[in-house]
Length: 314
Image (tube, rainbow, N blue to C red; front, side, top):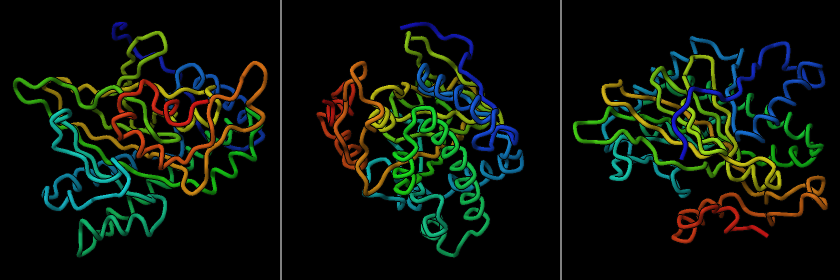
């Protein structure tokens, strides 16, 4: 394994001038997006539409959420593994997270809010909904750029209509004496795409294809756009998800972060015909995204070096 190096992930700006589809800046940005995803599986996005006020509001809401008693937070359950409350795990004792399913819909956010605050919490609800919708716009811009570069716009349009967003709100407490600083073990995400947003406390590290770990510095306007396992299945292996981990330094503050995860519901993900040829033979059979997630949490899925290939590889 390589040593920790200074941040070298590509930084891509999403400002007003490159958000107009078909424009020269849009096409140039799309080229950079695909190059970064193919090489690193992720990149840092500077998102011009995201204000410092929203950054402060969503992290204030995060602190308010984690201040709730444990017996309230554990009511956040889900049929899908890791989509509800996760915490108090011996393997990752510093980690605690809750999930808002269907986070870009008022119905989804209100259901979560009313569960944890039966008397209501309009401020939390509106902040979480606005945040999710704003970050989902970034996700959709990135995926439109990818589909255009690969010439598979029709395939993406089908997926977009079946897209569901999960907002995970995460807290890492400070390590206590004698604890190591591992916040989350190295892994790839089982999502289609993931967009992470960090508070001011460092911790996220991305593993490059040559084995180096890159520490990602947080900033109020930056997001880490990261491919999940399902995106690899859709692009026939052209984009691979990066391994990443969170390491909490002793003496640091509590660390909050947010992840907006994309999942495809009620539609099988399949490789577009345009991405299969003599040089790129078919690598994956069509698969159900949520069934794949359940497979990952089986013994076979956990044991596999590449769960998606174990589940639906050709």
